[in-house]
Length: 122
Image (cartoon, rainbow, N blue to C red; front, side):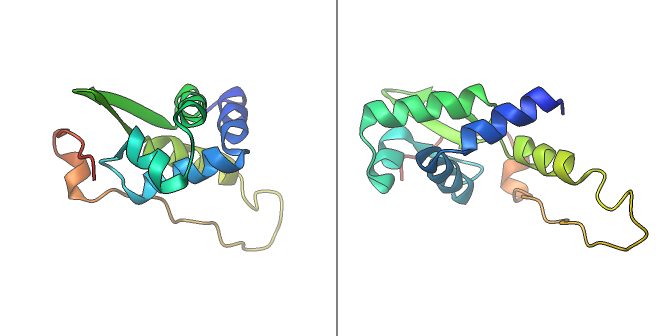
C-alpha cells in the first residue's frame, strides 16, 4: 500500500458520518446494505449519504452494486486489513523491546469466499 492511498483512506474516515457508514457496513459484511437502509439506520438525508458513500468508494473502502432500483454497498475488508498492515508493518523495529502488534483483522466467514450473491435489503 502506498502512502498516498493510506492518506486517502484516513482522510475518508476522518469524518463522523463516513466513519459511521463504514462501521455499519462492516457489521453487515460481506453482504452490505441498501443505501436506503443505511440512510434510515444512521438518520442521514439521501443527498448527504450519497456524498459520503462517494468519498468512501473513491478511497476504495466500499463497493456498490445495483439490483433493480436499489444500490447496495459493501465494505472492502481487504482495504482495511491492508491499512492496518501498513500502519503496523515496522512496529518495534527500532527498539530492543518486545511490543504486541495488533494481529486482529476482519476475516469474513466462509460465506464471503463463496460466489457473490445478490445483496439483501434488510
